Length: 210
Image (cartoon, rainbow, N blue to C red; front, side, top):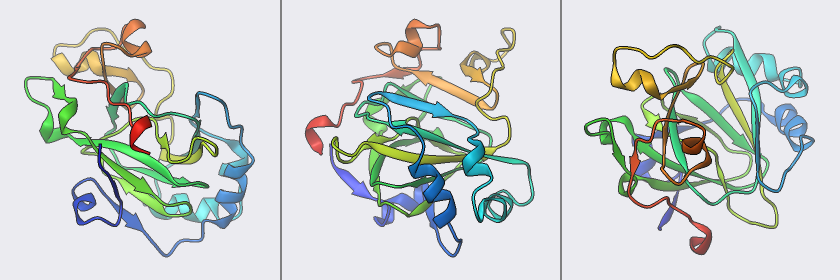
């Protein structure tokens, strides 16, 4: 699979590079969070939320809405699932990392073919916005020896516990957590846990593309 960078013109369909903000305090706090062998996600990390410049950063990114700065850290090369929120997500890494992305318009008949997924490398220290219309999931590492520490900035309480009763619309069944609609690949652990299987095609693995 070809891995583009977020400086490629194609990225503008999925997100944007965000410049001008002071992020050194958040990066310093992020670097001190755990780095597991697999992946770990924490919606809100207090040391990041209280880091120097964090309040100003989050307030600016979300226009005064309540926000949370958490992380997704570890080692990963597989797609497994895609998700979306009703708002943008902001990512910032202490190492280079790779995002596997698709667009909501790629969904047909409530299914998404993984052949529509594209890969973008995000350089360390570069803040990116992933648009609300962009499907994404756990980052992938660019270097297996380093893994990844990636900030996940979202509106407050996103990805926290919430599992409603079955709704009248087919996509209601994708709601996996608060403000988190999840499309699982049949080979994923999420599918085994009951997540809606809505990805068709190969469960992408970029291990041999790094």
